[in-house]
Length: 258
Image 1 (spheres, one colour):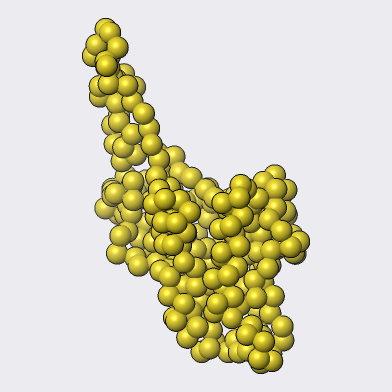
Image 2 (image 1 turned 90 degrees about the horizontal axis):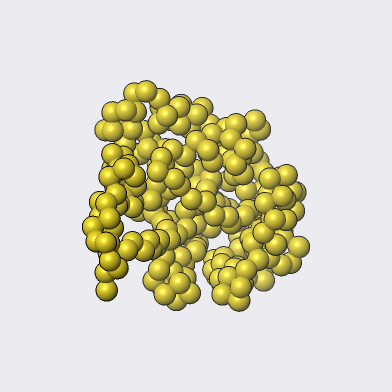
């Protein structure tokens, strides 16, 4: 493990400002027709027992982003509208994001514009978005041409974040860890977490650390639709329903329901 505090993205204030600069709400409404919503935290609302709705998260607040950057010493030294680093040297942040359709490309360009509006010079790694397989190869290999990246992840019926945020997890592409995070993740997966209240407390501690460090910034939750035939009863898609089993599913009509 390496302390990255002195690296380009090692300043927590810079990371927080970048979070507040993103107008996720507008993207969710305009580009996704409201079928996504800004994520305030990492455990999605479908896990109602563990989702912490009290966390405000990184709402769109460019004024706050500007205040944070000013206070942290990122000034526009040469007057070109873009901030230099705290030593007064040019600051260029390279973003890796996956290629997609025209809408995805527009969204990616929109994020760069958001950051430019608070004085940050963020550019695409290699000057363009990156093909899916190449993207994950390069992120996983800690490509030096990548300062930050945008990816996607999902959860199964168990929302434990260890598969992505444990210090030894192969999918911990953010590379963030700490002694407190290690302890919290161990607690989430411990036998003590058969107590739902205890587990919820540990999830809250996980959420707080990720929010405070801005090591990773959640962006959107997706709306998922599941079609179920009207001839079927007792089927549920509720992730919190741990008692559901396929042997409970019933076929209630011998003929198709019209």
